[in-house]
Length: 217
Image 1 (cartoon, rainbow, N blue to C red):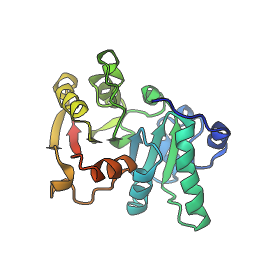
Image 2: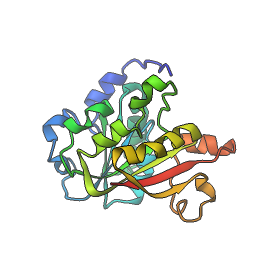
Image 3: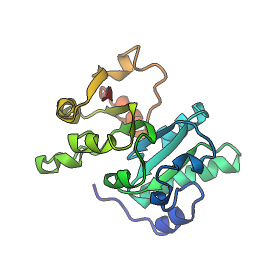
Image 4: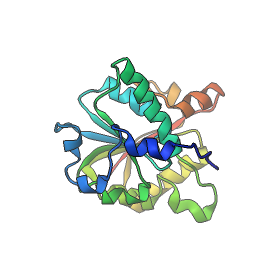
């Protein structure tokens, strides 16, 4: 998908107080960014930030970091935070990084992250691009380098092909499923407390079933 370049987006990201700048210098000490020792949950490929902003509001005892590669996309999340700040409603436990997910082991130390969210990730439909998919065995091995031993990954998508692929990758990477559903919004257990993303609202409104898993090592 070609993303439209937004003039000033990169500058806005570089100057935002909500963005963790030079995150590699904070590796192993990421909690200092928040000034507490609370658990850290991250969303990789956070888009415009609706999901993570709501999670941060609902769970002030958890620190959240949104990971987004494109400054033009991250800009939308920063604009939402600015709007919330004007109303003095911006959650203080939410920060962002503009970074390629493949470099996350350079910014997070072993056992530094408690939970990872993958929401409606790019399916990279061509077979030759399989290792770029965020629930691929390659990325699962990457997550091993910074996720706590009892940490979990939660993945949601409406793309059944991508979800089936993600399930098949688990044993190859040494992970196992704690919970799986192929119709989240009709699953009374897994849907309890579910916070929807922008894409989830859109696809669900069209009648697309939402798949979800929770996995651990």
